[in-house]
Image (cartoon, rainbow, N blue to C red; front, side, top):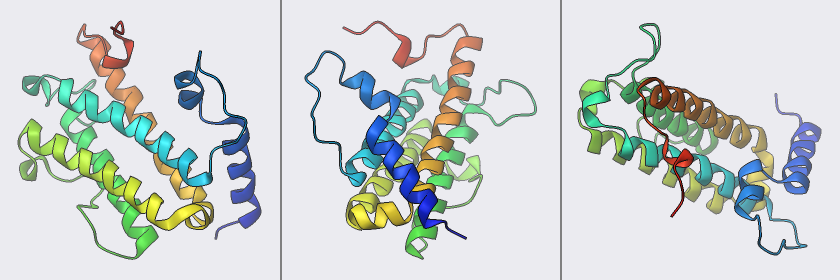
Length: 179
């Protein structure tokens, strides 16, 4: 059961302290004295993590999409599919619809190419953004625990993909020198 007081506390923390990546992105720029709206704060963080994952899905060599950090974990391809499926799980739960492929682990046989995986992940992030914007501040506040939890879920898998990069002697896109 949802706890409205907990959701409001989470929203207050989100707005007052911002997300770590948002603060980093604003370094050196004049800080706005107006805190972001709930929708803006949620969408900015959702898109930040989502875009990092999309960049990695595009960047990761297609011939290594089957790479597993250990035999017990999902392959890189399976992780990207899992993230997109989980994003649709949230979207469907919040809307009561059946959008996208909301299976926990969509089979790689249905997303065989890198292009198909990237497109699926990209669409899941875009559809999440569209939902938050459609729901507005009131809707985002009502479902704040879901938004934070699913964004954190993407972030946790981002960390796993970073480990895959490092284990293969590769540098993750976010760690590369900026031009």
